View (cartoon, rainbow, N blue to C red):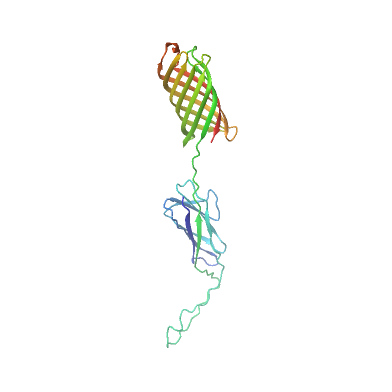
Length: 304
């Protein structure tokens, strides 16, 4: 928000009761940011439950106060009625009691040759308290509204995994390396929503290499020092080796947890199901069931 120049004008109106140092005190403010939608004010304090909220069409407040002591108006502004700026404030003056002085309402030079009229003194009543109407101007810079901004999760996971073909008990049982990058973009209730990109390379005893990559929609939620996440999205893999080669595309779904033991480092565990929908094989020797592959992995997460 632009910084707003707030002209706080304390206007003391001479309307009061006998023997009481009370008067109507009016504060008037002006703003030059058309995006401001709400104001809230409080006199002589900043208690959370004591604010009075008004919309942008209201720019003054009048309160009957004891003007023998100073009073402070605290004023805040907001775009949305939820996030408020820090307070600007201005203090009213103290107006002590005094007797009304004699005043001559006629100018000696006004009547020329006419005789000067007699001035009749009207003394103030003994119990009357008279105050002078005064306008006081203060310039206050209203601080910017503090709006909460979204802080995304950005984390790189590097880990080891075990990949097995399920339900084919004769399928490949492999160990390998996987790398993933996750980033969230927005908040939806208790969940942070984003994307997760994942690649892996696995091998087994007959020197076959299994490569895969996926891009998944991500939802994560914080629970204490942990974040629990789920992800789902398209998946593709290629198998290369002496016995032939095979490729497939399908769908991957993953559930995982990260434990944030340190500020930038997390320890994580996840299970991923890779379901092949369309596959191509160049040799009958790879006739094992690769339609469904289960992956278990442990990893370190590095936050940015």
